[in-house]
Length: 110
Image 1: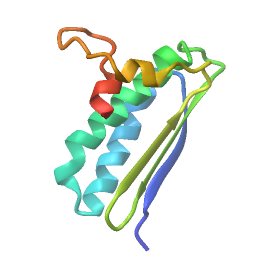
Image 2 (image 1 turned 180 degrees about the vertical axis):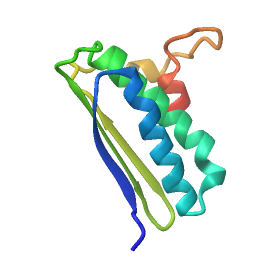
Image 3 (image 1 turned 90 degrees about the vertical axis):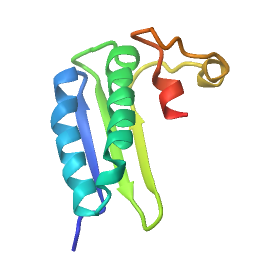
Image 4 (image 1 turned 45 degrees about the vertical axis):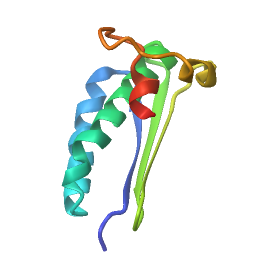
């Protein structure tokens, strides 16, 4: 039976993102979803980096939970960090500066 998803717990280390994205690409290719690889990987990388840098403050004592599940007509991704949280609804109302090197996560996931 073909694997329907990935569930991982990552350390708060940016180096942990690349191996996960490689596995993510393989999973999408197995399910003939390679045409969605760029957008799914972009969202995964952006949110994982946000969780590591902003949520967990790169603390080696904290981890990031990642889950991606492939359904018949959908793909669900969940990323959870151990940070204090933020008001994402307020941030959704502001436009991201296209020249900025930070602050694009909400806009990209939208």
